[in-house]
Image (tube, rainbow, N blue to C red; front, side, top):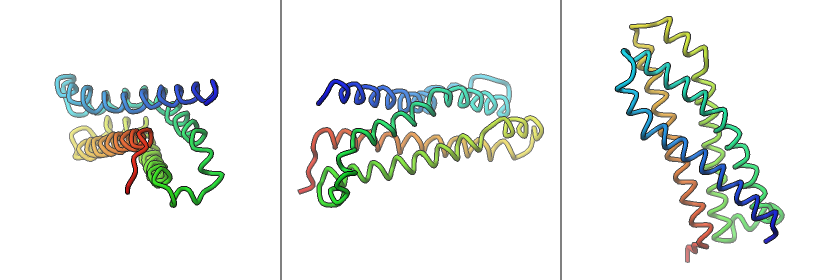
Length: 166
């Protein structure tokens, strides 16, 4: 392994820490705390949307870096694609890649769904059932993102450990 490879692995781990750690913090610490902040459900959801947008300023670049460094780290498998289905490592790596693609798609839908327009609609539709729909979507997308991210970390640990199926 070269010094550059070590540096890229460090960047990969740092980006994973930001992405997964931030997501877990928001889901496990921040979201439950919001029950004690603000006077109404609308205020709490607006706060969550604003915090989410702020987190995205670092989370989105981290996720892009994470995917880029992951591709770099697995570049040898792309030279011989049959290794993705003929080796235990390749199968795990392929599972990880598929989950990363699903996570990225879910994340894009999540951030596109909860922008400033959504915030304006919440303010506009105070007292309606709209807030409950938005709150449910935020919770569901957030849970999906955290669960997928944790599974991806587990697969990364399996890859690092050299887990064999046989």
